Image 1 (tube, rainbow over the protein chains, first blue to last red):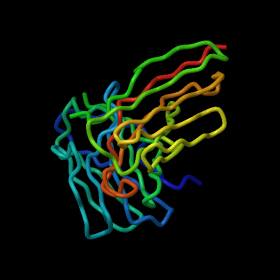
Image 2 (tube, rainbow over the protein chains, first blue to last red; image 1 turned 90 degrees about the horizontal axis):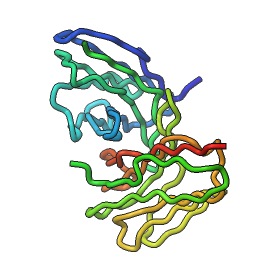
Image 3 (cartoon, chains in turn cyan, red; image 1 turned 60 degrees about the horizontal axis):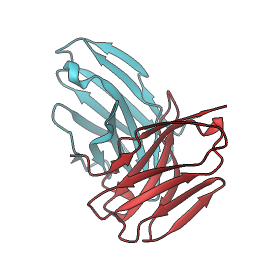
Length: 110
Length: 113
């Protein structure tokens, strides 16, 4: 079984809809991250969390929110999706030596 | 603002050739990591370099961290079709990237048989 899982793997939604992307990990890491990947732009950090009570904004947090429900779960929400949020979204965990990425969620906002 | 400039963005070469990918920045990083990403998957760590001037080898791949810890390179010797993929460099400002990594835009590498 994968150490970092993301659901859904693919999602198509409409402008203005609220959507949640979920991430679960079995690695036992405290640190979790959300990145988005756009063609030609690489990965950019949205939010990160050091533990259940800790939430930190990354480079591009506007339009997004997160919830760290437990050590193993970190969800990303788009309160009102817009087309320029169409991207590939990755969740990751860290043991301070390496980041371990999930398989990604491909989100399309029409 | 993209703090890590990665070049080239695209590279297509024949099997057996050598290649080098560069990652440059005006910022100093505590460490720099190289990842490889396959279609439909997340990036997977290849190597971490921490000390200025450090050189690490992973089979046919050689990674170097600049003396000033602002730049890095990935050199592949005798490239093979299995080396095809997206290569990403990522810099950490704090230990191990605890507050997240800054990624370059990536290099799409295609090795033709």
